[in-house]
Amino acid sequence: DVSGGGDWPLKNACHSGDAAAVAFLLHVGANPNLTSTGDNALFAAVRSDNLECVRLLVDAGADVNATDCDGWTCLFQLRSEGVARYLLERGARPDISDQCGGLPEDWERVPLGVRRMLREWRTSRPLSCS
Image (cartoon, rainbow, N blue to C red; front, side):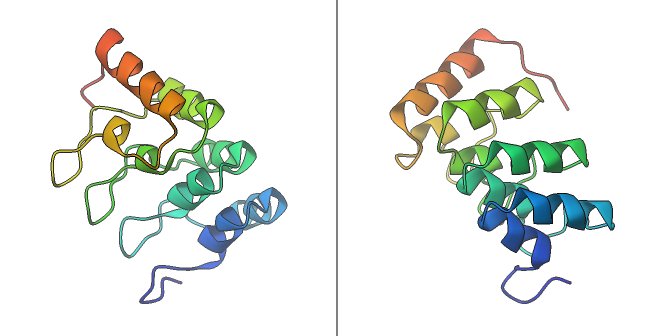
């Protein structure tokens, strides 16, 4: 269930990096795209930099291009090149800007190497229109 703060068991399990709990919750029917603010379980898994949780969510149908109330995608939450590459290879679009026109590669909390990867991916690969 979505509370006023946007927290629920799947998102909390992703936040703590508990892949076993994420797998169980998805197995019993948790919706990987459930959100009240746009900041969904995938955002939490990316913030926790847990590739296994990210994989479980994407395999369960999480939208890698979902945006939150500020226009951010999960790419604005990146902490590592491994998670970045995984998401990019599964269709995450580094060209989606936030409500102020910023891109994930502009966000200083994203490590420099990851920002470079996003920029290179955005400028050297054809992006889908989906």
